[in-house]
Image (cartoon, rainbow, N blue to C red; front, side):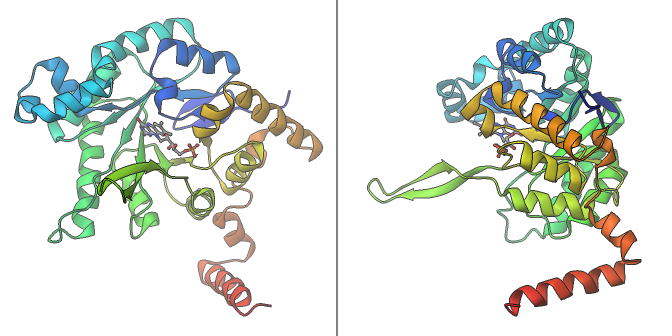
Length: 327
Ligand SMILES: Cc1cc2nc3c(=O)[nH]c(=O)nc-3n(C[C@H](O)[C@H](O)[C@H](O)COP(=O)(O)O)c2cc1C
């Protein structure tokens, strides 16, 4: 077997395949399945701040009784913070691979408290699942972005765990924002978070949600454009259907590749298959370690090959013009 180890935000992963935060990772049995399949790491299902409120007996939910009903009917209260603490402790005793917890907070106080609780439970890293839909016509984009940065700074002040931030792709200047996430204390950034998409039901005349598809090429583009140009490690999330996508993301510069829907469809066998196929590809192309190809096709490398950012821009523009002129 080739050496597939990677370093992701200071954690040593035996291979780059991470099981993404989702229903697949909300129980000990779930984590066990992925550990046995040989995953490099697991990100537990996100805990939402509302779930902490319920367990802490805090007022938050009393203001929103309908939210309590909604959470209860969706089974979300079974996955409460105390359960997670137990799950982390048990999983750390039994499995020898990095376990990351994921939080989706609402308030500054919430982010800080829950991050501390999860660090105390013994997880190896935290993924901050940050996003709020920009609904306010009075609030410009940079206000949202500085809000996200503040969350990272505050969490960084109280925990010493490796921190990753999972972000949405609709940020105006991703290179600038990701650089600032690194400066605020994130060691990793996950590109991207994918949400349920809105739809309308023409019979009931009600809004409904559907599960959209992640856009793999969008992830690939941003990994390639950011790798080694910002301080943090990058993990890719979205649209990985097998070893081919995983290899492309590593070549573009990802330190780790998260997989979700594929595992819903194919189960643990998909992890073994990706790992074996990556190994075979390295063999065929005469590499002995995965890190030898990491970032080989990133903008940074292209940039070095064609000397400067100015030339890189000219090169990308020339490709764009060629494409659109049908030549
Ligand atoms: C059923 C389901 C539940 C998910 N729950 C979470 C979650 O709790 N937290 C999170 O950060 N991402 C969540 N995700 C998003 C995935 O982690 C992942 O980013 C997304 O599915 C895109 O990757 P994929 O194309 O490999 O599925 C969920 C996805 C699915 C399909």
